[in-house]
Length: 539
Image (cartoon, rainbow, N blue to C red; front, side, top):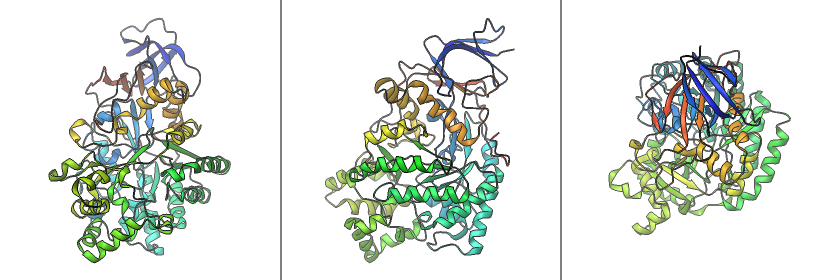
């Protein structure tokens, strides 16, 4: 007997098939019937007239593993229709965290950390057990981060791992996947992960695959002047390991590099005949990351504390300053991050005495303070280390639309789980990714059809994870559902005012329970930790 009936909604089933009007019955957490249903005695009936009903959105790329333990209601995710998020991206994960390296990992991930109770876990299994005890509003799956694994074994040592160290890294990766991690991620633009050679990445991806992982997701080594070789490296990891490849937040940074988009997409299309390959994207022309990304990788050896010590040494600091300022082509090609102070905006700075910096670019701050932008950046890093969060502009709207149209591109936020009390000026994608696509890029710009946009948010990511019982509105699937207005859905969060919830999401169900209705959370907490199993099915 149905407990809930959504009547007369426009069903967008997630497969990309044309929308159709139908009733959907829910009982015991599952979709039981889809069609024209005469009645449902005893069920709560929801009038779906004028609304669209879709599968719950699956966000393949989040960093919720650093914030969900602090905010298990996940308001910024649930409010935009995300019922399942996949965390542990860009090589960052809160595990493995052996006691001897825990502080290094905590510093490394400081810009992501929402206030974790470090020390409660060391291994993946302990972390996942802690997550499973939380009153979760939505579902969460995690990946193991290559950067975290490298730190656990060899700290910030820039050298190649010894045979013994590589075997220990393989063991930690396999242990994490066997505990339930759905994949392994890399963030090859961040030290110390940037020191890894392809052979290391292949060895760890093979270990993950043997343990049952579903994918290798990668924040590629270079998203600017050397994006071609970086894409090729990701392809090679997939070819040599046999693990499906997920290119994280595909984009091209820097106006001079934007024309590379045709070659990049052509290479990805060609590679897809040899390796299981796809990508994801957030619908903004700015990203967000730690300010520490601007320093050369050698300055990060030993971790954030060592960087701060170097910045306290006038001679070493001057060397770092010179290298960032010079922007030598050879160094940029070798991995130095392009320093464009007008495009780097401070989103979060821990110190109250520089709170007025938040929302301003390094260029604007430098002009106000009468110093050069590199000095501002290094002063902030010396004082606050890895806890300084930035918004980085420099992408192309035309490229964004081309990537969005590609059939293998999933929509993903690269966001955190936030609420307005978090403060600062974080990226608006945390609140607006999915409504922005449905409002701006479907209804207003016509970049995607409504059916195709929903496919990119549901069945496409579900297939990447082998989530067989989610991602489509069909009988027998888990009743993770989103009821929204195609005519009014809008992202309200902006770069100036980012803590604003979207409009047009009428109801969100997780496992058949209403967790969000008419702009408010209901307090229901039916979410669960989705774990990878050896046979390749996330349960």
